[in-house]
Image 1 (cartoon, rainbow, N blue to C red):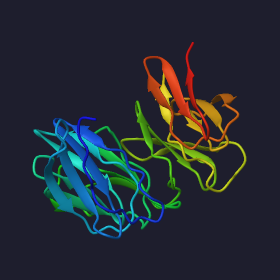
Image 2: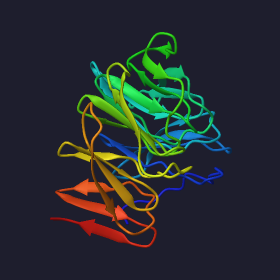
Image 3: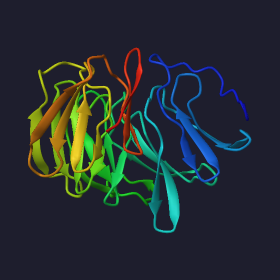
Length: 261
């Protein structure tokens, strides 16, 4: 073990779910909970606390993301009621945008100069132009939809399109990422409440959506809906697949499975 640190007791009714973010020499972790929400940055080599930003959110399960804006980077957190950007060098807030619901699980997707956020149980999906200052709710929202957002899975930007899966109704939507125009919307399998937990992934012109039953729907990427195949791994699967060096790594309820040609 190289280092170990204690971030204190966490009081979140579903536990913690966010992944850490490596940014330069920093390891950045955010956690909203009822006993002192925080965004913390640690020295990735020593574990020493570099800076700490105290937050007000009581629940939140997404992960922070980094975006490059002009000559500087911003750390983006999408959580309870708002999306917030921070200065990674000191942890100070740069801007915030209102519009999220109370429970926010999806991590933002970044592309086409936009931060695409999804909020809560069938709440809004909206795209923000980063780089603002203060409250940018009325100035930096490029587009927004009022409902149909995923509850658990994160959105995905691939080529010119943004993909979301509404896990409350098993419905996938393809947006033009830059404008929010809906290209198509289709149901995957039977309509089942809270049926998708894994986030979609894309490779080789295909987008893959895995439901909790272990079925992966393979769709052709692009402006027209085309279901190419359905793969059934035969096991309950909640985690997002990891694609590394031509291999797939899938964590099911009881196993870790590697798939290669």
